[in-house]
Image 1: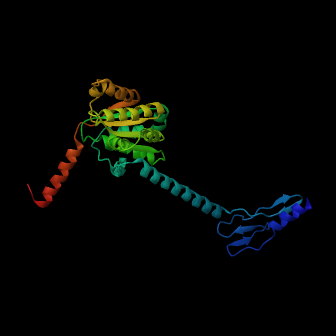
Image 2: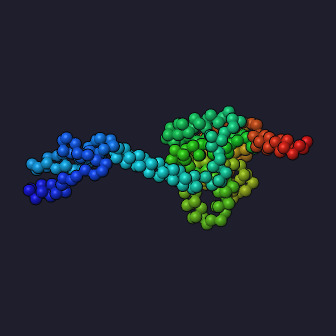
Image 3: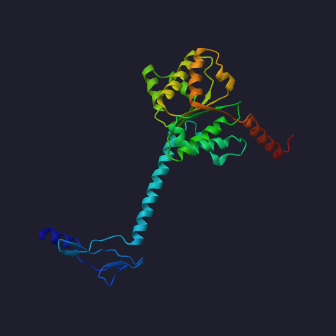
Length: 278
């Protein structure tokens, strides 16, 4: 026992204050800056020892450094999530901060993000439908970026990219590829409808949708098809796809204005004004 006591005593032997310290009236060393102790006196096996402790300012500095380290780790994670999950890099610009107020429905995108945990638990997705250029991709991209910035893994891609990938894969590779998309808590698929005239594409789109359906995870789909077309498919092949989407995704019509054309016209008008053209 005495050996242990002596060992502890030697480990925490008395020392003299350094330049940024002073000796207090209690015989303990204090920080000259924050005037809090850098030692504490404790009794061990009948002997007093003075192990070191962090003073207030050193503890604050350590906590700040740890917080900065964790924040940087989080930012690095978000960067990796965006690199992996946003297949088209133009989606990086689809953020609430870049919303110009064209679409009143964007408030519902905010709501979806704010209630993400509830949406995830109830496996609730969205079906964003409307004409070409009305802002469906921007709407979905805002959700993707907002959730990723909270650290939620999201995959956003489009059916053309998926079909191009699946075309070059063997059967077993296709299954692994489709399964890999289900690792993401949220999957966003852009531009449903391109598969209408291809038997191969129809089958692969069904496989993607059915796999996601069975995964029990939320799905967001955008399409130029009307809700009437989705509810009244032309054949069984389409019905199998659309029924699964409508069962899990809340239909939401996106602004009927062609925002793409309006933006292009505004840019053209500015160019004409600059060039003095008519």
